[in-house]
Image (cartoon, rainbow, N blue to C red):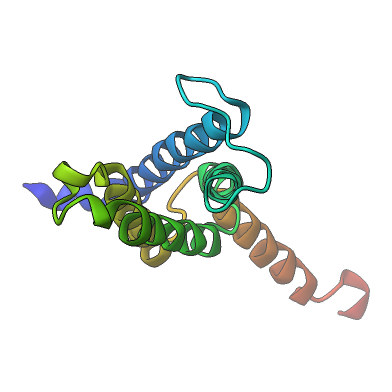
Length: 145
């Protein structure tokens, strides 16, 4: 019954990547520009401003599927840092220390390190384009035959 879902897996991963990247980038925009109910992070402040830059850039790259694995790896690490160095002191469990979003983003982004961009990402488009250009380059020219 669920075997037919396997053919949709790249698209599900692609949609998951896009939603995760968009929401992660929104956190960065909110912190960098003081919008969406968030206070603006002071430029250069540690760790808030740097985290916001990673969220914006990493989230944007994950959203479009460009350098997905690398962007997701760095972004996941920043969320692990946020959880253990910012939230953990407030209690053991994410529900009590306010670190649930950091923990969730850490694991969501880490999943993308292993799955890649899925369908609809620039990573896949660029790879496919490179393969087709390589195939054309390997074909013998009509003059050579």
